[in-house]
Length: 173
Image (cartoon, rainbow, N blue to C red; front, side, top):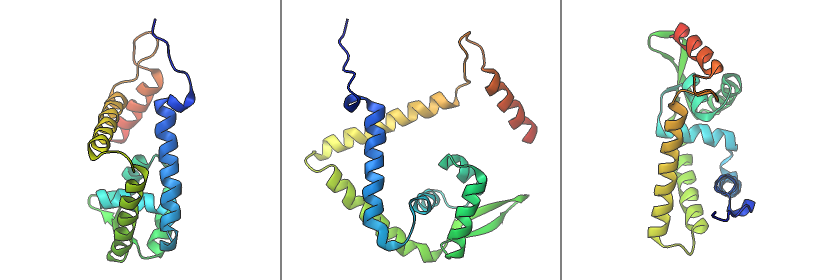
């Protein structure tokens, strides 16, 4: 039987979470002068990758409840960094867009992020960094695929909560 290393420092979930936490903390320190909170730059980063999202879609992507995200978008809108526009075909929904005012800040954030990655991966070859990124990409893809699969209970059937959630989603759609 293979001996397992049970030290938390060698646990992949712990390491990924801890490295992400440390990256966020150091990034916050480096971009503090820009005047954005972590939650604000996280929303802006998601919009930068996919501008014009509904608040609901954005909340889902960020694993946030819609109400707190709405307040966050309110503050970003008050600062002139995002704008809302009605969603075509759905009077209840708003699309959220970045404004031109935020783009210089995004460039500052990108520069800070690139410098942070250089510092964080110092001592590693470009190949090892690329392999690490590929490993994380595959793990993410696998986890997304697992999350899209129907939840199974211990008896091999569909989880009752998942069944209720699907029923609610169908009735709304």
